Image 1 (cartoon, rainbow, N blue to C red):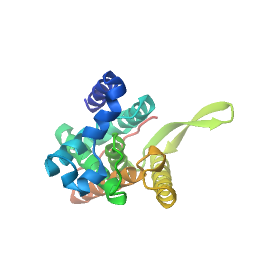
Image 2: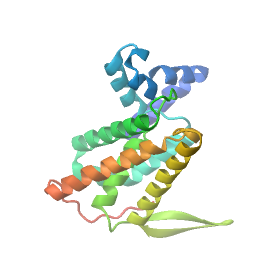
Image 3: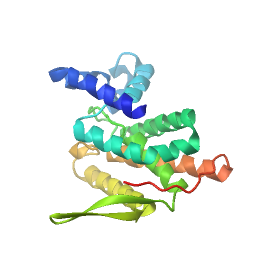
Image 4: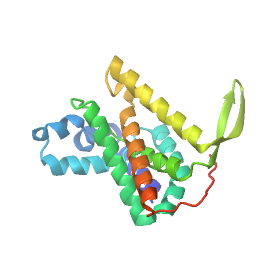
Length: 216
């Protein structure tokens, strides 16, 4: 249903045609508006609504498909552990944490933060904690040749996190936290939030994930 919701909202974006940018700037989450509540009518309530909406907005087909592919592969395992309602709360909570992490890094940014990446990063963090022995099938590009290999999930996810962290650090050191149009620190914030929640739940005995394997 999360994938369907993201796809439906993206179809709405496409229906706006040339007005989509105006829509995103008006209703998506903007860090400057969060730290300067007087910059937007509605103040705190408006920022909360825009943060929620932004998790379902995407900037293009590749953005949407990439995010939904990761959600499809890793999300079902995490949802099996939490149950439907708790998974939804977990997903939205990680998305909110990711949004505010990026906003804290670049509080003066007037660029709308959009995408499910932060929430999905939280799912990846939980997957790493709960399924450390799982393996993922991934594509490997060798010049003109393409093959597949089963890689340990921790290797895949830790490598993904390291790339996000250092990409964000380099972007921040060069031209700003949002350089290149990618909110790397939203990914970092979401991943750490999801991993921490998963760790606490497992330590407390509230969840007992079974050994699962996922293919990618």
